[in-house]
Amino acid sequence: MSGQVRSVKDELDWESKVHVFYVNLSASPLPRLDFSGTLSYTVAEGEMDSPSFPAIRVTTGGGRWTAAYYPELMHNADEYSDLDYQALELELEATYQILDNLSFTLNYWYSDFDDDEEYVYGDLDGEAYVFTGFITYRF
Image (cartoon, rainbow, N blue to C red):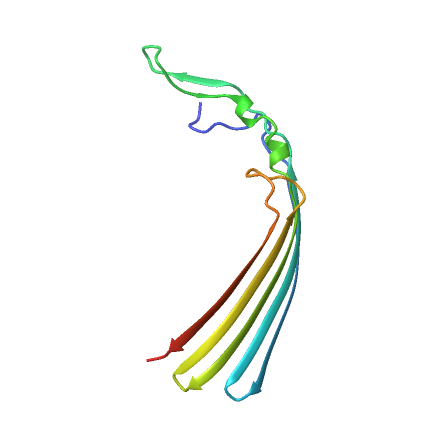
């Protein structure tokens, strides 16, 4: 036996389809002011066959059990490995160049994730947003 447990099926049929639509705009309305924005939309689907593993129990020479692999641990792996989600992301940024080596930036990021199939960790639907501001000094 090799050191690796393999599926009874030599190959698992895994199919995934991901489409990302992306647009980015930037503008400099004033010599020291820059704006940029990014919008992306992702649609993803994926699925696989159910793996089929043989039961394996490993013992030492004296008959002591050291490890085991139980196929039932993979029960419904094909179901909880399905992917079906959409994600919308928006990022806006404004930078003002105060001096040649000093700038101030504001950044806003928003994400809306819609999970149509529960994955390994459950339903991951949700929204998130982050608003940051920072000062950059260049030496």
